[in-house]
Amino acid sequence: EIVLTQSPATLSLSPGERATLSCRASQSVNNYLAWYQQKPGQAPRLLIYDASNRATGIPARFTGSGSGTDFTLTISSLEPEDFAVYYCHQRSMWPLPFGPGTKVDIK
Amino acid sequence: EVQLVESGGGLVQPGGSLRLSCAASGFTFTNHWMTWVRQAPGKGLEWVANMHPDGGVKSYLDSVKGRFTISRDNAKNSLYLQMDSLRAEDTARYYCVREYHSTSGGHYGDSWGQGTLVTVSS
Image (cartoon, rainbow over all chains, first blue to last red; front, side):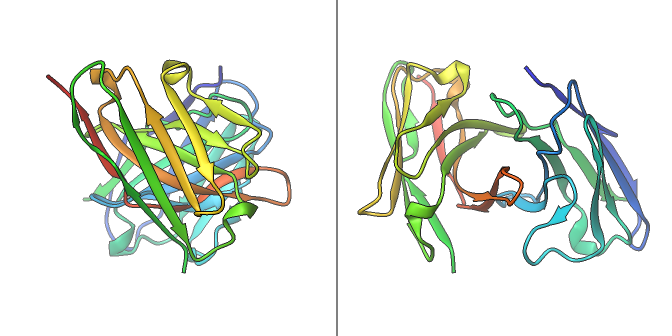
């Protein structure tokens, strides 16, 4: 069973700063990795799929990178609406776990 | 506009049953795998079950196998989750999710409903 770990658990930054979130898989996920954003009281939203492809309507400041077991979500310049929890998710092998999440909060 | 509207949640005693429904609109339902994802209060996300468009392939999280059944009615553009022998640890918000099939073969949840809350408690 693949296990996903995310770091850091919490990232405290100011608007305009760059955010770098990490997701590591216990074995290769063949780039079948997604990133989701979830704000309080809302459903998750797909940001990135296949490790590096932005979903429809996602701003260019969100970039996914990585391959195999190590992946990164970068937000180039944080906007006020970007403060949220971010989950990675692998779609390579059942049971399809999500990572535990990284909370990006305002410093 | 894609819409997914869940219903059927509520308070149920341990050992009880509930049937969740998801009404889909704004897209061709028969073109998509559909999925249930849950989130316990204050916790992370958990993929529960998913289903092929024709209903021929279904997959389940180990902890719900034999207790939960995913189904769909393509004529009604609806997805269902029959939940039996419910446990306290099944308490969560249950989201109906449409899957997007990428060109590389991956499946990703590209549209989510707002969820329906299931509480298992005596």
